[in-house]
Image (cartoon, rainbow, N blue to C red; front, side):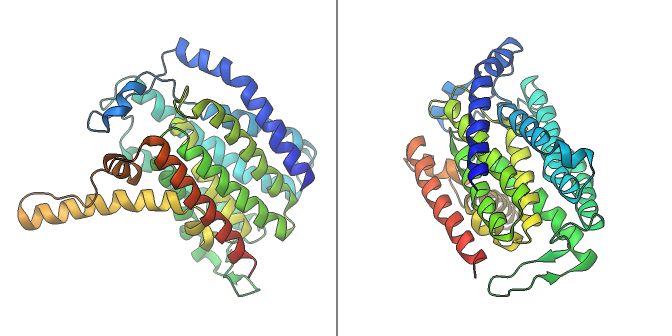
Amino acid sequence: MKFALILASISFILAVGWGPLLMRILRRYKIGKRIRIEGPRGHRTKLGTPTMGGLMIVVPVVLITLALNAYNLLGQTVIGRSILIPLGVMLAYGLIGAADDVAGVRGMRRGEGYSARRKLLWEIPLTLGVAAIMLVMDLQFAGQVGVPGIHRAVDLGWAWVPIAAFIILSSANTVNLTDGLDGLAGIIVASAFAAYGVIALLQGQVYLVHFCFTVVGACFAFLWYNAHPAQMFMGDTGSLALGATLGAVALMTGQWLLLPIVALIPVAEGLSVILQVAYFKYTKRKYGQGRRLFKMSPLHHHFELLGWSETQVVQRFWLVGLLAAMAGVALALL
């Protein structure tokens, strides 16, 4: 655990150090945020803020993890093969997110990037492939699920593959929806990775502990520049990569049933969008005019339109998210 905390500090220093250079690069190529016209008016001042800031997290995490596991990777040990899963997921989803960020900046679909359907065409085969590889590699807890209170993991066999794919896919997209306010996604994701780092520590998966806290350190560094008022946004490059990786880590601990608790805020954000769309379509079909459950979705915008300041939403959501992460660790101890 001592080394994991040292890694978090190293990751923080490296990421903070390369932040100014990244911002200059993003400004040089005009990779700036587009703002939804129908969103809260306070967000319009953020127009043009550098996005793709997720590179500030992904790059240090990849470099540190590769350096730390070079021997295991070259020797093709079990640990070497295992660490390739979260690392590969982070890189693959980071590329998808980067492509979407660039598409959004270049004006496609009024700055919104690729459609959800198009991104799913990439994400679904990818997540199914990752899940199948995890099972074939016979990683610890692959094909299994841990249930609180039961001290033996339940084997699901090949039925685990579509479930695992859904976990990674849904985690990626709910974190993506959470990334809408200064500091929100970064601090929520950091809390969730810290929780799963502790769970991995309890299981003796030291390499996974190191990876999780490397991510935590990089997320804290990103928050240095993303704190309100943000100098840089995470973009899909970061939110998709971090969300998918969080899902992969949860699967590798076998405690993925606890993910909706540990990641309570992203789950609530995703559900708010699903419920909003479903209710609007239902009322439009029944009454001829669509109605809304929330003033706006995702959920953080609803509270903004209720009168909460952006800082209040972020701090209150983080408090709930931190308590939820602690509850997840507690349930893992049962």
